[in-house]
Amino acid sequence: MAILEVKNLTKSFGGLKAVDNVSFHVEEGEIFGLIGPNGSGKTTIFNCINNYFPITAGDIVFKGRTIKGLKTYKICHLGIGRTFQVVKPLSRMTVLENITASAFCRVNSITEAQDEAFHVLEFCGLLKEADKLAKGLPIGGRKRLEIARALATKPEFLLLDEAAAGLNPTELDDAIELIKGIRDKGITILIVEHIMKVIMAISDRIHAINFGQTIAEGTPQEVANNPAVIEAYLGEGYAQG
Image (tube, rainbow, N blue to C red; front, side, top):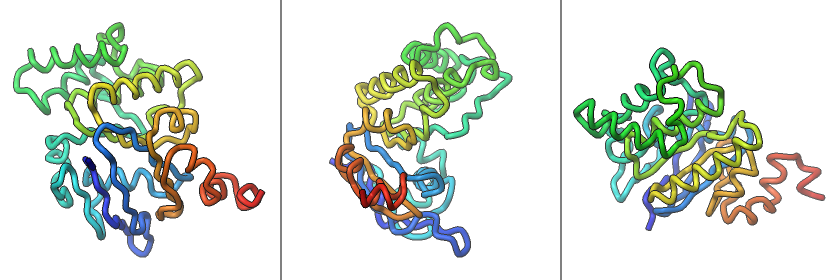
């Protein structure tokens, strides 16, 4: 059963179509990868899903209900969480305080919010960092904090935007396990990622775009072997070879 449907999505900025008639659906419980070269429109699609950008044409349906035009906070309340490619924690607050602030999306008391924050801290491997200022975390810690803040909103569906960017090989392996663990908690994931080791290891299906348009969709192996995908990433000579 599809939990999210993107239908003929188009987003224009003036005369530029950043996303051009893109359609795909994400099944409940799966990890669905969204790939494409830099500037292909991946993050724009995320921004349209949770209405950071109003869409120009098309529709977005979550659990059978159109969410086109809803306020971003209402989309979050419906169960769609989001991380950002450029992480910007509340730098003067501690790791615990950052996550506690996000938990208020679902609860009304500081006690409940902190309880939820500690659960998320443990799950994300951040308990030892709880009292550290967010600005003092290395990139790997900030990436985990970004995921933790999103999880504290108790999403059913999670948009992960380059959660593994900038990580070393050990951190990459840890990120893969964390993302799989999120899915094991019953959360459906739509992930944008440039690191092929990550996207190929965790995705059930992958949708590839270039210049704002769909070029392929299928299993990781099918997409990796698709000539249009190879050409988009490596150039025409590799696709023909």
